[in-house]
Amino acid sequence: MKVIVTGGAGFIGSHLVEALVQQGAKVQVIDNLSTGNENYLPEGVPLYQLDIRSEEAGERIVFEQPDIVFHQAAQVDVQRSVKEPGYDAGVNIAGSANIIQACMQASVRKIIYASSCAVYGDLNSPLIEEQDPVSPLSFYGLSKLTPESYLRIFHELYGLEYTVLRYANVYGPRQTPKGEGGVVSIFMDRIRKGLPLVIFGNGEQTRDFIYVKDIVEGNLAAITRGNGQIIQLGTAVSTSINDLMLKLRNIHGQNLISTYQQERSGDIKQSCLNNVKALQDLKWQPKYDLNRGLQDTYDYEINRD
Ligand SMILES: NC(=O)c1ccc[n+]([C@@H]2O[C@H](COP(=O)([O-])OP(=O)(O)OC[C@H]3O[C@@H](n4cnc5c(N)ncnc54)[C@H](O)[C@@H]3O)[C@@H](O)[C@H]2O)c1
Image (cartoon, rainbow, N blue to C red):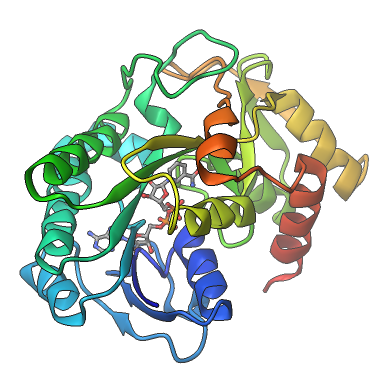
């Protein structure tokens, strides 16, 4: 199987590339290295250092004619999307349209798109379902949502096969503190530097933290399942930021200090994704509980130079 991973040098993309290589796939990566790192790629995986908005990126896909394209590349900084909506839309909307069109022209078997729980905004619901209304609070949420419609329309017009995977808050080794699921990597970064963990508001806001290896398994399952579907990849378990801090204290030691600062405007109060559809359509369910995933992430982050 021949595969192209856009954003393959990034946090999630590089774990996906590793797993695909282990499965014996012939993998190539398109990444402009804006947040990614070439060193995250397994040896022998070709990197095309291209922007997803460029003609060259589209031409590469058409030339290679891969079976599957995993589209992970994106501008992932929510704050930047608010400050520079044009840039954010350029990468996440126009860049995605460029990649999707190339997939159609290359007659790929399927494109699998990394979407996000940010598309929902603040639903005030304890467990979000795929059919819940979407109302993003940031331009990032909107720019991740729009390519879902491009995929649907490309499918209707040209029969291009696709699956949309809406990820919960992903964490794990190699995560950049700037990305949307960033709180775990921000906390890890502060632990490494011996700084207190800063919690905004009362810390009772909740998130659905999912380990990166589970996200990889969800992507692999989508190679053969979930055609034409929008599917959430989450744990269906809510964890407050206070609970997260306590878990990290258990791992690191009681000397881990936290401080509280004023609530940030626009912070979502609760976000947790139902995963029943993923089980039905992809035969996927998460395998890592938060304690295990955090321990693995801690071991990697604290021991790296
Ligand atoms: N991390 C999360 O919690 C989370 C949650 C929901 C969805 N997602 C989605 O998962 C995907 C991967 O995110 P991540 O957390 O691994 O972030 P990341 O920043 O580590 O990875 C993104 C990759 O895309 C590359 N990239 C960015 N702009 C590009 C461009 N114009 N052309 C080519 N390459 C470009 C970067 O260099 C990087 O390697 C993104 O689509 C993101 O929206 C992530």
